[in-house]
Image 1 (cartoon, rainbow, N blue to C red):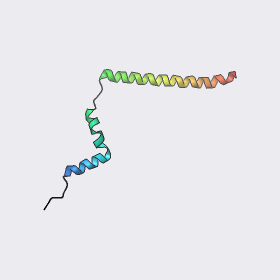
Image 2: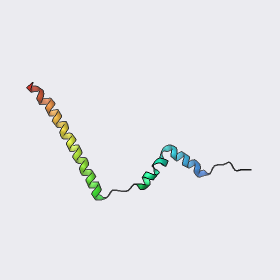
Image 3: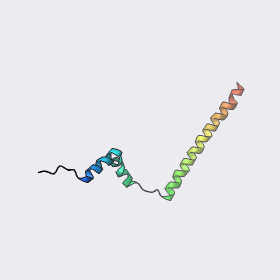
Image 4: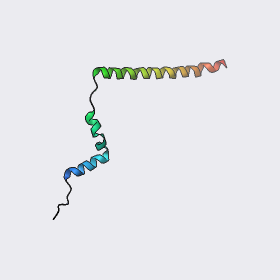
Length: 71
């Protein structure tokens, strides 16, 4: 008589692939902690972007507040 039971790890694999773990496991294995220099550069670029976006928003607000008074 043939044994029709599935191995226990096959069911686990199916459940994990349904949750997305199977697709992302390779990416998670390749992930690493950034170096101190890489982290500082990322923080610097992010801060610069936030400041620039705030400056553009402030300039638009200022123009919309004071420019219509001249027309």
